[in-house]
Image 1 (cartoon, rainbow, N blue to C red):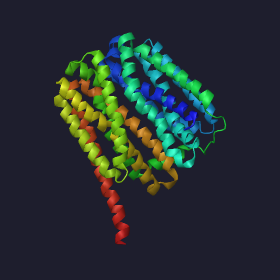
Image 2 (image 1 turned 30 degrees about the vertical axis):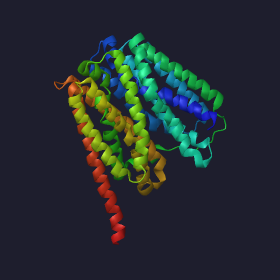
Image 3 (image 1 turned 90 degrees about the vertical axis):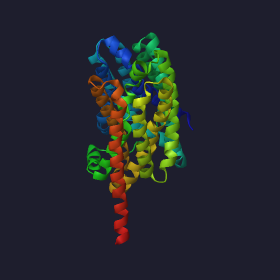
Image 4 (image 1 turned 60 degrees about the horizontal axis):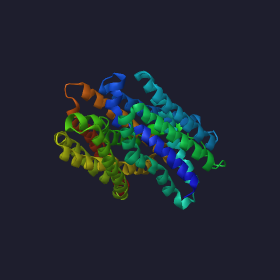
Length: 393
């Protein structure tokens, strides 16, 4: 793999860290800024919404920019956003800073995947894209628990300064390693994105993505608080558990891709059912340190195991129903992932602030994932009907 690809991987690592590290810092941020835990949870929702709505619009608006210049600009915006987060004197300013970082996130992965594919021969493009996205997985395993530890020891602002430094390193790597003669494909127009959204079959998959992937974030957003307030772990122990959880996520992502290759609908149905069951089980095991960790190992494995199947399935359906908008459908599914995160974190905040409290977040998360089970089964029925009609004819 060319060195330029590693520059993109470093940037993906920095972006992945800033997206998920807040999960481990919510209690600390809430205490420091004198806001409630559900209000702090909106930091996750606002970031995800920034990615969801900023990515398609900004990708279309910046489509004619020079690729290297655009990537450098995005990392510069990322550094500004995280530096502003570290300096934020108020909760409102922190929300604005998170939106700035989110705009860089959305466009980076939309454009970065295309650049990664162009850096290698055609028969290695999938591996190149996987290499870049590996930065996200590694961020969950190492960046999130390390950032949580730094925030607990030196304050949450130190974590954002550390992420900003990662952005500076990524900026330097892109400036030095990324070639200047990158090809530029015809940018996706907003009209193309609207046409994809006009497909009921693709909207069904976007719903599967939002509820199936995002449903877990009802609990995951407040996982640090659950582990401290309900399970009884110390702050330092939570950092170690997040490492363990991240390893389970990485394993699930790898295995999920393999089991989804042949029949993504069947694999997704099974994964969503198991995920919903595990969330219900966590409702009862959260009070026991040993049982809680065992349940989280399974939940972490399942949380990202559905990602490859969802992305594969949306591409398969786009080729059938919107053959001219496959790339747009793939990008919109990335937006659906982040919309799911926003919905999950928001619902989690409502649950925590209600009479149900923290202990109810797992079973409420299971209800959202159950919606994904229903949507997946409906999509499977429609697939079988579309095959049966031509055969009958």
